[in-house]
Length: 527
Image 1 (cartoon, rainbow, N blue to C red):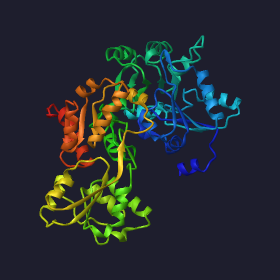
Image 2: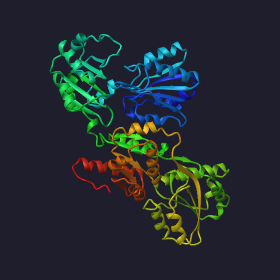
Image 3: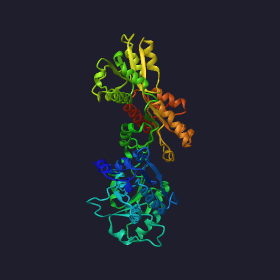
Image 4: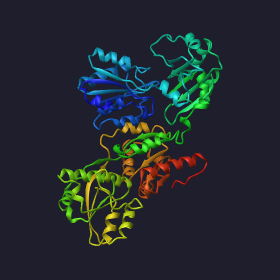
């Protein structure tokens, strides 16, 4: 519904102020996603999760204008001018901010400038960290027994202010739950003012670091001691401070930091249209999923061979699919040639695994053969049980692929015809700055679903000037099958785990087992 609303509007020359949520990309709203997907230009801040930018279309212009303490990429006035300029050029501009743009996000200031310049705009609210972060820490901001009032306070007022506009006396004595945003660097002053104006020194307080992300850490203690506890634990911005009796409920209600993959950062390198299943499951288990596709699908250099095969389709006995993508692209070409599934009625069809079979079934056809071992060797073992001599087999597949199946079938006396229907390439419009941002903090694991994802990852990392040797030494390569694992080891990864079964589900299970055993004090051999 949100996407329909977006697509049915004339959006050229408009700025959409979008709240990107508190960090967890799963908390992005549907309407925000729809505008991000449609945007020509995305101007984004420091606290925006890089994974959200993957929703952008391939040719979108991504402009980073992040602000950190003492480090501003652009001054606010320059950001305002940038928004006006891009909109006047006829672009749909998404101004993407962390949290909600109207909660200490300067959203109002930016819209004032757009109004002065007669630039049309819309606002898509976001889930503010003020409510999401305490919720992820197991702290309800209101509770019938403990808190009927709550206030959101900036912990860092504008640098241009000569004196504070915060009414500390009213806050200290009149509000049950206090939530300070951007206050860790100013925590000493905050504690001092609250106690000086009447807040009990033993009031429960919490500081939540990187809330809603796997790196989330929560420090709890009496208000009078919280500054010391934060310093002892080396907690730094970004973070949120919560003061009030509701903090005492955390011991009973905490949940996020107890998830099995909590604190793990996992990079997913699958193609953009394939990341969903692995990201969704691992993210639900607490991992921070960072999506950076290292492959992209493209038409083959030539359709000559598949067209030739389709012209003489009646001469084949078997049709073998080795990937779900191969199924999809084969049928696309079949339909373009004004043919349909009836053209395959004389053929027996084999698929290399259940996912490929599932894609085939979506076209109304059930495979005749799925091997028990989901790889080329498994198919060959199955064909060895048959009399395949003088059979003619068509294999629509990627332009570059293993030749194991082709050679194995030829050894059985089969006439094999391989026809490329797609190829994998390094993604166009790579955002190397995003990749560098991802690796500013250690990555626990990188998932690889094929040898090409491994090889392309290393090529792209070199382009981004990442510390490749450190990555190879410290990050675990989680691979589907021994072939991909062998490629990872050959290219220098020291720690490699692999799923023996060639499915994403099996890889997910292996990842969970690895971290579970490790956290339980057991050591799983990685390589």
